[in-house]
Image (cartoon, rainbow, N blue to C red; front, top):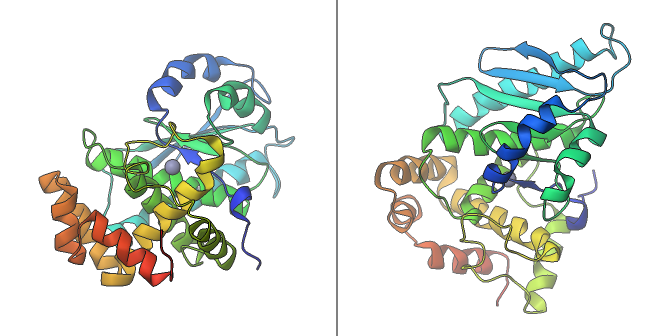
Length: 277
Ligand SMILES: [Zn+2]
């Protein structure tokens, strides 16, 4: 399968928690596709779904869709524990919106086109079936939800938060963290001296970036997290998170997991890609 171009990547934003939370009551009451959210539970999730799907039953019905969404989330939950050592205890809430309702409710709020975001609740732009893209968004947002559950007051740098989410969604889909097209985009950006400074992607969120910088920010984030895994396997990611939750000190946790601090990790990532600033 051809790699998606960076420009067509799906972005999701964990940074809009506060603003989005303020919007939610209105959005939740807005007339959706059929005017109400269907609700369904699984072991670890509570799903509310409001996609315009004509029939309730049958293979293309909304019940089947809800089961498929929950199966993707539960599969992600198991993989989270295996890969990152994250196992949220409280039930995670997820809302799947009709695309038109999602755009109308959140489009103006988002600094760049997004397929979902996390703000205490996973909110995603839905579809009438579970596509690869929707599964990707669900897995991405699940990581934000799990990190929030593990350490609600810890402010992670965006490169780690978004990088873990991107890395995990790729792992869940069985593809490399960066595909060929994405590596080429990264190389081209480096060639033009356009890579974003580590400081810019170390802010708690990426909303301060220009919209056109977002694709590169997510790619650099995924490349940094992939470099942690390249140096020490998935175990390094688990060690990093456990240490980080314990101490709150990222460089110390990175040193423990990889032998490098953030600056060293970036240099190692650039060297691995044959890039220079
Ligand atoms: Zn995200």
